[in-house]
Amino acid sequence: DDIIVVSFRCTTSALDWMTNFAATSSEWEPDEDLDQGHSGFCSCLEGRWWGTNKPRVHTGFYNNILQTIPTFEEFVNPLLGPDQPPRTLYVVGHSLGAGMSTMATIYFLEKFDWKTLPQKYVNISAGTPRSCKKAMADRMEEKLAELRPLDKAVVCRVVRDEDLVAKVPPRYVHIGKLVFLTEDGHVLVGPKLDDAHIIDEKEMKALCKDYPQLAAVAAVEEAAKEAAKEAAKEAA
Image (tube, rainbow, N blue to C red; front, side):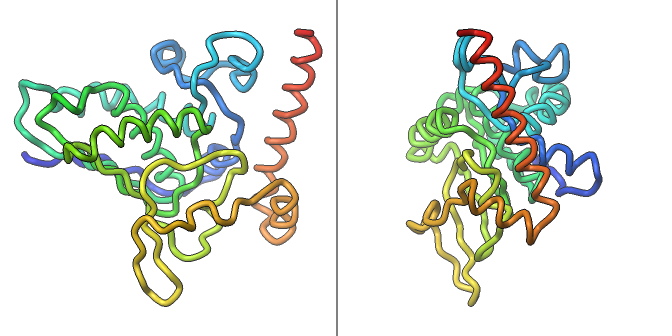
């Protein structure tokens, strides 16, 4: 009764790969999107030249978490609150599941005031793809900076050596503390090498030649940029 575990699995199907490749971004607004169950058509354009300019996240992961939130509301949320006993909520995931666990972290940190709850939040992910735009990452890091001294929240992502998944998609960033497993088996917590090697567009194109499955990421990103340019022209 003292722990709650939410676990997200890794990529297992072609549909999962479509989520991985949907690398466009959408505004984080689950209150508006929950009823329709997805971010909306052309959500990659909303908030860029019109709207509220809310923090943005990876569209594929966001659409998946919108499908998952009703389950949270039914089974997890009732166990969190000032009238509930002290518990630790563990949210874990690997690869695609790790990206989903990041979305779940955003949801739970936004949904509850952990400073006043008797519960604690822990997110541990492995092989985590990038899924947040900088504004959202900064917002989450501010919350974590307040909660860590109170021992109310821990967010860690485990990266094994030069894991490619942890470096894509381009133009997204991570949240939480890095736990780095070196090639020779050492464990480094919070090393200053997190963004020492950021994959840019030029290197992404080169990687696509060696890893054909990444070509879809580049294709979606390019299509999103072209759509954004056309929308800018129409708005001008």
